[in-house]
Image 1 (cartoon, rainbow, N blue to C red):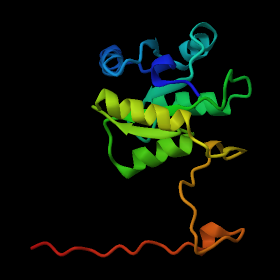
Image 2: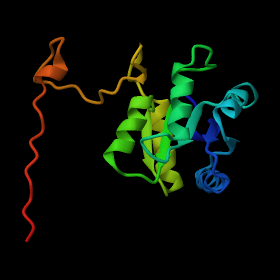
Image 3: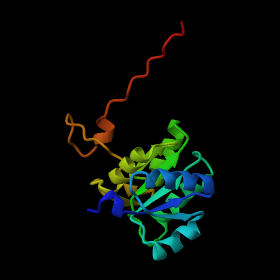
Length: 173
């Protein structure tokens, strides 16, 4: 397993200022081999030039987003140079629809920006060191979305047996 300072990171964003900010944060934690791409075509070109170990993709929202399209493109394109590359989605959005959209697109980790170099490094290392199985299905390609195993149930239909979380409205005072 590579150490954080030996990883090659490819930052995917059309926002050049954000790329520089993330690069500065990562350099603060001794990550030096950092490359940029501003669209899916540039990402594919970067695979041959930079040979990244991890992608950090900027995501803006749950719908019509270039970052999510890039993740889906890498995961689902049959000629993708590395469908299994660890991907970290970085976004200013903290809402559930955006996070769910990133997870369903096939990201390994999700980082809320602005984030410190330490936090970005932790997310990158979590994505690189993940031991979750990789799923290739017509409706989803990416790391297994299940992060925990329920000890109370071990059968084949685990999701059906999981009890829903009760939401109790809080009265305003």
